[in-house]
Structures are given as C-alpha cells and as structure tokens.
Length: 263
View 1 (cartoon, rainbow, N blue to C red):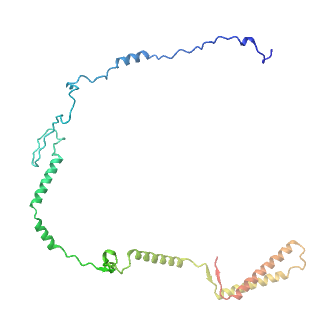
View 2: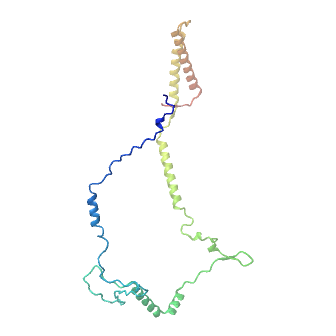
View 3: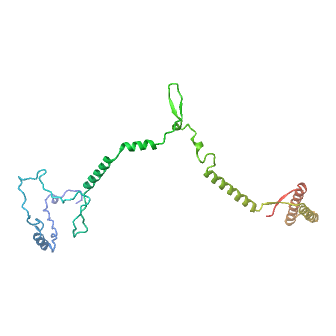
C-alpha cells in the first residue's frame, strides 16, 4: 500500500492521552510563615488608647476658637531674663519688640531735630555752582551744554595731557631691546663668505697654472691610438681636469675681487 492512499484506520477517533503534570512545589517553611503572619497581623493596628477623650463630631474646630498659650516676652530693653538651668536655650526679645523700640527712638530723634537750623547751615556752607558753557545753535533757541555734550576740550586740563602713555613707552622699550639683541646676534654670527686678498689670489693662480702644466704634459704623453677602455677613460679624465682648471684660472684672472667660503 502506497503512502498517498487513504486508510480506514485513520478515520477512527483515538482517545487523548491525559497529560501528567509534576506535583506543585510546596515550601518546607510554609506552615511556619503562615503562623508568624497570623500572630503579627494586628500588632500595628493601634497606638493605644488616647489619654484625652476626643470631641464629638458635632463640635468641630472653628476659626479663632483654639487657645494658644505663648510665652511672655518683655518689651523693655533693661528686662532681666530669668536664670534658667537650660543655658543652651536662652529667652531673647522678639523681632517685633526690637523693631518697635527702633521706631520709637527714630521718632524721638525726629521730634528733637531742628530742620530750619540745618537748612540754614547747608545753604551757608554750599559751594556756588559754576556757570555752564552753553551755545545756541538754532534761531529757535535750542541750547547745547558743551560739557554735557562732550564738545568742550576738557582733556587739556588732565594731568597726563601731552605725555606719552605708559603702554607706548613699554612697547618702545621692548622694541629697542629686541633690536639690540638682534644686532648682537648678527655681530656674533660668523659671515659665510670672506674677501680673498691679492697675495692669496696670486698663490692660487700660480698653483693652478702649475697643475695645468703637469696635466697638459701628461695629456701630451698619451698614445695616439686609444684602442682600449682604460686608455679612453684616462684621456677623458685628463680632459675633464684640464677644463676645470682652465675655468678656475679664467675666473681668477677676470675678477680681481672675490669672496670665497671657507667650507
């Protein structure tokens, strides 16, 4: 029988096998926890019986009915405070008392003050104001105070007028010191070139001419036929040396004053 064909045994309903679950986990301390919970269940339910019997709900608290007993504080400065055993909490006069005392003192001073005499003395001692420098700039009477407008040359009367400011003096001083340091550094530096004197120039010319003669005689003694590599190399080397010597001799003879480098 092939797999794709229908079979009658699959039409019969099979009973479902029940799923067997493992037993539920129960703690060993389950009974002791329940016992402890029941014993401490109502331990914080009340804080004990009230010492004062509360009022009835009909007698609710109204405004300005609570009796507040405050400590008595004297208003006099020379009040002697009672000696208490509690030295850490002394009794001081309140801020309201000190404020009222201060106001009373100011009031008494104001009453005893002679304003007329004070005004007369102020007027006598007062320095008369200087006349302002004014200018009328329009025909309608518009006036400008030159001092207030910044048009008066008040800077002329300053102490440092016409003097060099200190910061410019400082800049000039620093520039001068920098220039002196630069000049000293240039003086200490050895020049890269030096002038070639006449006697040294003549010695060089004589030496170059002698070398040229020696190389020229050596060049004349070469064989007529250069048929090998060493002969060709020797001839080219002598030609190069003679050309270099001729250039140096021409340079020394053409320019009488020369500057040379020691290095």
